[in-house]
Figure (cartoon, rainbow, N blue to C red):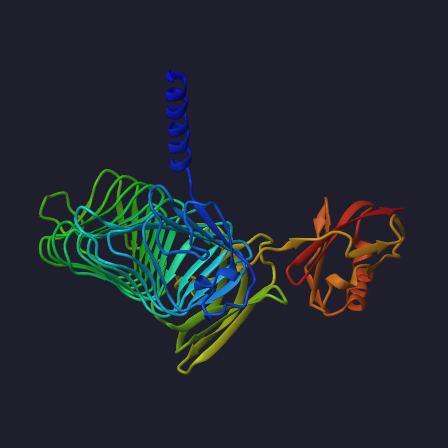
Length: 511
């Protein structure tokens, strides 16, 4: 009897362990939903796990039975409300479009993961008001080329709500929103691997709300902070902050830029009441407009502590350029950068700069001559054909240079570049080895070439040729005939790119 008793206890123990680790995963599959909404049609999902009986994803789980929703194909739904103990994952090959709102239920906690997938919210991202002891919380994690765009409405972080943004540290790990409302006792943490981009203003007027930046934060508008000392915008570590218009601080708020962070402010630092803006540690705050002169006393509007610095250097253009944008062509794999000036005075030229590592490492990639002096609108363009092979957000800015070498910068803008697929055996070079100057490239696998524009170059240990773009195999071979005499003997590589694919062909040139 005693042996049976211990056996029974053991069964209960192992059952409790199994229950503690149980979950149900719903993985999407191609379907024709009977209701018109894939999230309410059982034919659209493959379920694994049995601690929940629903045949399609519920919007909430439990501690003993959390819910994981995995989207790996294209889906469109009208809206989505997330409860607690639920994880939404959009993985590589997946694209979830929500034509309405994505809502985090009050006093509930969820995770949204974009691991190579794409999430588009055409309405608003809403975190409903929680309680002071039961916060509403959403964690957003963006990695491996994933993206999260709120294209239509706003990001509404209501009272007692928290948003945490994380990622893998590249420029792609950014939540993009149109505008931003902020409630009381709320918080946004942008972790070291994450980023937040707001196209409009950031306005918080309540109390005890903060944005803490360890990664990347940018707003194309102004930041207005009013209320008590609990309202804060803080930067830590290696944070990058860009406020394209004004930083306007009122009331008793204390704003601190610390660590080794860099902050760019395109307008003025405006301070009223007993507020303070503090640069401390190794932080540098670059200001295009005006700001109160820093001092050491307790009653100063701006303070420099340790080696924190306010700099009058402007890394953001005054508004001489009336628009600037970048448009990517995936078929030709290039970016067309266009901008226009309303008027020009003493304008020598523009230098186009690019960064593929945040906004700290801009390199010049081209130059366009200016008009000198002109009172009417002038449009300009430049094509960047040398894009990175791996997926990334590519950042651009335009440096305007006067005849006396003074310069200013445009605001930073970006495009998303998709992954190049490395191929093998689509093209071949012959004869290989080659003697003299006789060499051609021919198409072997016609199924992998759909008449896209071809870009190619020669890579040799002692030199790299110019990049050439052609529209046919015949034209590529014509250019190759011209290049070949200048290629030294030995092994070299022909890099052929088309669409979103690239192939490297190794060739041996003999004497």
